[in-house]
Length: 85
Image 1: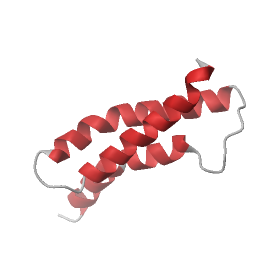
Image 2: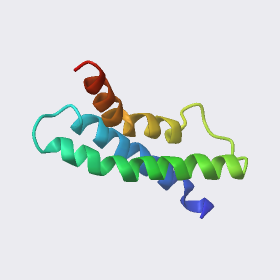
Image 3: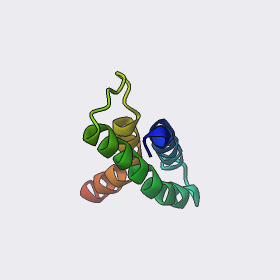
Image 4: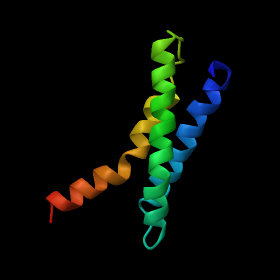
């Protein structure tokens, strides 16, 4: 499983980027961002869990945390629009 760790980290980052880009586009692409949010957050969480459990040194640019941040953008937007309504 550890040999696939960089692939898991970059996969979470790619899904996070897709989520962040599609969450600002109108129409049905918002639903694409909501569906890509779950695998992005899941892969990023797995990356952070494995690097923490096995004490793996991560570079300065940690794809797990960045992927989590990018995957949570639609939820942050939903909460923002709900509170400013």
